Length: 189
Image 1 (spheres, rainbow, N blue to C red):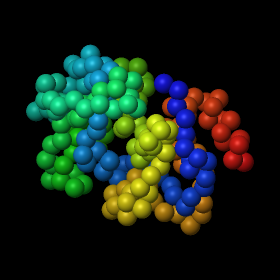
Image 2: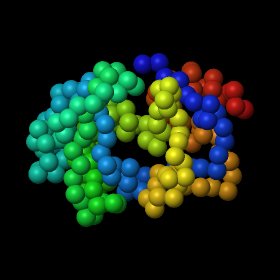
Image 3: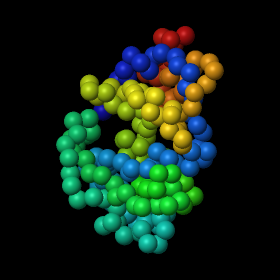
Image 4: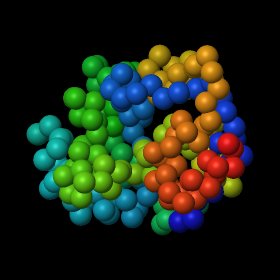
C-alpha cells in the first residue's frame, strides 16, 4: 500500500512516547483488528508464535474471534479481532491473547526469531498505535486528550513542542519508507 499522512503529523505538539516497558503494554488492553492477510501470515507461523506464548495459549484456534468485518483501509478489506483475555495483572483487567506476562508481544518476539523484523508478524493497527487512520485512510494522530489522560498511556505531555514526525519516526519510516520520511522531515525544518 502507498501510505499518506494527515497534515497534523507535519505539526509540532508537546507530546513524547512513554518508552516501553514503562507502560507495560497498556495498548494491548483490547486486542486488535487483524487483516485477513496478516491473520494468514500469523497462522502460517503458528508453531513459532505458539512457542512464544504461555502453554495454555499455544493453540492457534484460540487466538482469534470468529466474526469478520469489512475495513477499506486494509489490504484484503476484511478484518478479524484477536481474542481478548481477562487479566488481573494487566492494565484495565484484560489483554490481547498475544501479550505475554513480560509485557512483550508474542508476534513481535516470533517476528524477530523468524526474520529479525520485530514487525514482520505484527498487525497494521498494532504497528500504528497510537497513530491511527483517518476517514481518508491517511496516517494520523487523533483523540490525543484521551490518550494523554490515560494512566498507562503511550503518549506523555512535555514542556516543549516536538515535531510529530520525529515522535513517531520508527512507525512512519516503516510505512512511508526512508526516502519519503526524509523528504517530509526536510519540509518541516
